[in-house]
Length: 370
Image (tube, rainbow, N blue to C red; front, side, top):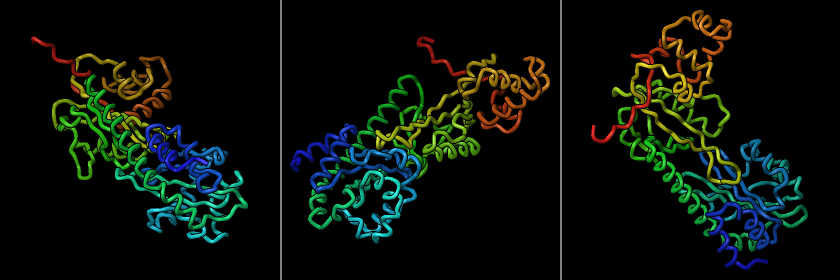
């Protein structure tokens, strides 16, 4: 059985390397005469990542990915204790209730696991980490001596969770600064719309956004802000159909395109998912329509970009169909897609988006000596 000091050393190592958690949760389980354990991270009611010791790996990804913990009563009853320590299953459930809970029925039972003890560790940035330790079916429930051994490790588990969250934040800050070096205003947002990191370029872009209480950001143009809010709400679901590239007029003479890029992470990241990079492309007016630019800004297909160009020129759908030798029904379908991807509802909005000389191009960098 691993000694206490070795487990503590490994816990802090896992804060920097999530690949260590399966082995560590196995060792923590052994210290309490259990089969193993799991660490599970949550942000804003979305379970982001999990790592399990080998005894619990079977079916774990399927259980968590299908929303198993959302259907379970385990976290709610655990938090109700408000205890800075481990809670045994028999303290919060009757045996009948526990056997019916999705954690047991869908995940633990197929692995030959039954009794469980868990603790929840809130992280100051709003994340929450739950540690579970589990015994095989037929073994006794966790007693006070078992919980005392695990409680001795809990402060170290809590600090490791805090360190992991801080290191993640430093990585995010580095990412925004890297974007600043190539001239891209950027910020990192979580699923609640909080700004976790921002570079100086976006902080100076006050013609397009305002800062709100609790480290939140809002776009000045109501329509653009509504699209941003919808995209932020879908950060935990990258497959959602919300618009993630859309125009923002702001209050100055330089419109911009806002891009919210999901940082999905995966189950192995623990703290990495449920975030988005808000990147801003300031635009300037140009006399030349550039379909390639339009295509890249709004994630359009080449044919959708050509249709957008025709709309910006003021052409009718019949004229666009005639120009490109396609059916009118095809153009209508492409127009619907262009509207969805640009956040527009009618042709006049497309014309306004590519206003004046029919297009926007990125503002070229000022040349020294001019």
